[in-house]
Length: 281
Image (cartoon, rainbow, N blue to C red):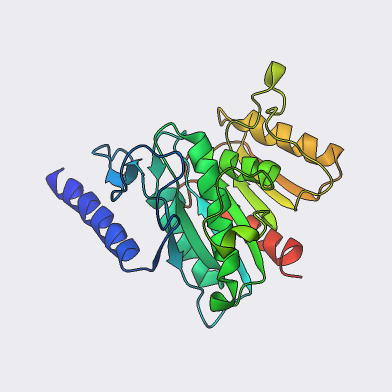
């Protein structure tokens, strides 16, 4: 048992070191809008259940960069929003591991460390600012399209951004804030909180129209948040927004890309195939 614990701790340490070695883009050069606490490095939770590194507090939002493999490089980027119920960020399982996978496929990936805990409005400001920063520096990475990939609460954040991208949620910081915060596509992996309307209908904050970008949805039928994907798919269909929805019978919630579970092993393949058709045009 002690040896197993050692291996888990070693794996977590290696993952954090790999992230620390990568370029870090701090979103707010001066004060963070609406943030009362001073800027500080992310606080890592002592809770390591499931071999997951959790950020318990973020006051200095940032993007961790995973540059595209030069051999397979594409002109597309994804900003990854980890889940964690807006309380924590499952930053390795639903962030860095997805960034590594996407970078090997040739996509430039950015893992968003948005504000937690319990700061969904701050998180939305961070998401707006994140895509504007990436769009403002897109020539550096040879990017033409920018999508969002969100897991669980990160899926909620991605959808909220797509609905509210044009709202002025903070005072402009620099020239990046003149740019659009609208994602070019979405990949929502076992998204949560999309069905907070009456009788579990679409969350009122989410305004879906024909101007929405294409969407990929994946969920397991036995996921407690499965209705979110069903409601979203129905709403997208009603507004004639291109989307692809996959429902696996089992898998539960919060599996990321980790092997040993069919849902976790298959959704990346399906998402990759979808991006090749819906995004790489």
